[in-house]
Length: 118
Image (cartoon, rainbow, N blue to C red):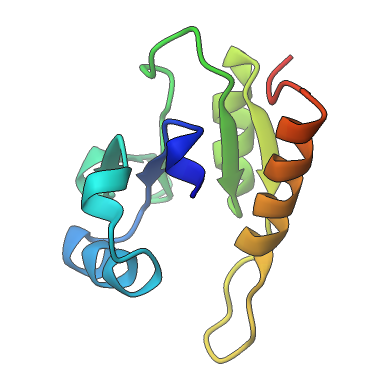
């Protein structure tokens, strides 16, 4: 499991009850496995009304991979040399394998000892 090798956190712009419902479905042991789960209340709202995740307060000393579909989050959070994985937005009713692709990359990086950040 990913959490036995990495400190995994989930930061979502979703409301907390919805985020918990999704996590219960896709990762039943998330409460034991995750470092933290942050939801909408931990996000920033820009003057334009757009909700973004400001990750600038995360601790230093980690290789951090940001997986997101919002270009504002990429530009806002790459200042700390995060590796960014730009995924396609989720469309309800369509098959989504974005996180599986990310996991394949992570496994390949671990096997070959590649860092996530520069």
